[in-house]
Length: 102
Image (tube, rainbow, N blue to C red; front, side):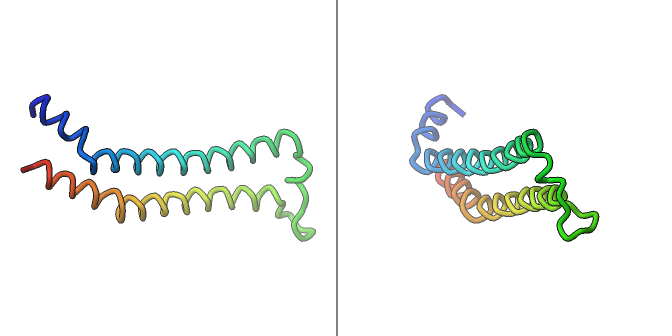
């Protein structure tokens, strides 16, 4: 592949759109997870008693529920990423490969 080919791909509108969409997806999902995780850490640091409260008088605490919710959120964000990658990013990538292979 020549430098001219590489420059052609870099300036191709589909490539620019692909890079932008991937970057937006990565950063937005990362930001959501970081905010949730560090919010949980700050809650543990500054208000541990709120997480130590029992949900219904038993041994299950609010902190356990929040922890499970964070894990479930991570699974949900992963599922969303896979969905978007399969339905938006991969077709754009395939289109770009087809056009640039000519």
